[in-house]
Amino acid sequence: MSKTAIFEINGKKFEFPLVVGTENEVAIDIKKLRAMAGGIITLDPGYKNTGSCESAITFLDGEKGILRYRGYAIEDLAEKADFLEIAYLLIFGELPTEEQLIKFSSDIKDQAHVDEDIKKIIDGFPKAAHPMGVLSSLTSALVAFNPTSVDVESDEEMYNAIVRLLGKFPVLTAWAYRKRAGLPLDYGDNSLGYVENFLKMMFKKPTEDYMLNPVVVDALDKLLILHADHEQNCSTSTVRMVGSSHAGLFVSISAGINALWGPLHGGANQAVIEMLEAIKADDGDTKKYMAKAKDKSDPFRLMGFGHRVYKNFDPRAKIIKKSADEVLTDLGVQDPILDIAKGLEEEALRDPYFVDRKLYPNVDFYSGIIYRALGIPTEMFTPMFALGRLPGWIAQWREMRLRKEPIGRPRQVYIGENLRDFKPLTKR
Ligand code: SDX
Image: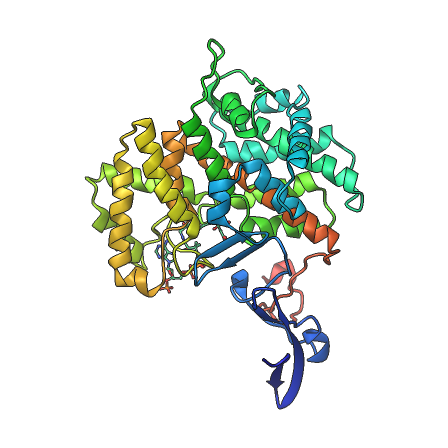
């Protein structure tokens, strides 16, 4: 295996080192390209062929459908760990000991409240405001109530900021839902676990106790684990980009929430359900929607299908599909859109358009069906994705700052007007 790559440009050769990762991924290190080649740069819209960083957090192999957090297979973690263990693993690099987990959980509970003035901010939103917009605003607002910026070199300050965010984010997420549902903005109960407490904050009615269903708790815990990190996706790259200017952790996460909201990214889980509902309302005519998805003149895409990296089954989709069957059976829920989803998947996996482009169901294709069965409304699906992705965003932001990565500032190729003289108003 050669250790360098050689470019030949206009008869001149330039040699660049190869970087090889622990899973034998190879990259050409072009850090010095522009200086060596007289200003020449690379161009790669959407960064389909460009690595932004070296990272030790998550490994995925899109061709083989592999996903690992800090070296542990996602299948193992989804089965054997709980969400707080995964949060600790992603952020600090190791599965916590029992003592570490107890302290981590206790420190997070100590932060599971927000300044009462946050309620005044929520009051200012119209009831119909999308919870993702409310959530990103409230996450930014946390800075106003926690003004001390984080010294990333201080393990203690960093730890405190992390547990503060992990403690407060579920409150903000639940309150974004309750505002829309016209319910009082209550707290949960620190005697409960992280996921149990979140469910209680979401669904407890003021007039009765909230009865926890272990099937619901387990299903949500697994969904949060499956969403916890995914290397350099759009929203994580946004968190890293904003953090690279040394903006604070909370505002960097707020930027990530906004990037996740897009229907091509985390917003897809809401768009999948809306698509399946439309198909159901259209007499289950999946063929019509398959044709629309393949019609280049039609902007419609099969939501929940395709992925920038996975050119095989998204391993998360496999786990979620199996869990969807189990959860709906356990809860005695009959949801016709699950059958429509399965039918759509079978048709697409036989259709040359999808097969040739290696378009498989992704994490968003079945997740909404479980969320619905758990009683979570459609507009809360992407906030649930954000709740799951929070530890991954934190881990990636922390790694970027601790590795002292430079401020993100891509180059461009200018294709605008060449120099021209100013035209006075009378001559335009
Ligand atoms: C997430 O990056 C991550 O890791 C993200 C994520 C995470 O955990 O953070 O995994 C979460 O965002 C999952 C993806 C959710 N989005 C959707 O389900 C929206 C529908 N999917 C597509 O919009 C699309 O597949 C993307 C955005 C996910 C990926 O797009 P790419 O990599 O830019 O691929 P592309 O647009 O270049 O598509 C290649 C071809 C094109 O056709 P041709 O030009 O070759 O003829 O495939 C077609 C596309 O038109 N195509 C689709 C399609 N996805 C791609 N055609 C119909 N339906 C689709 N869903």
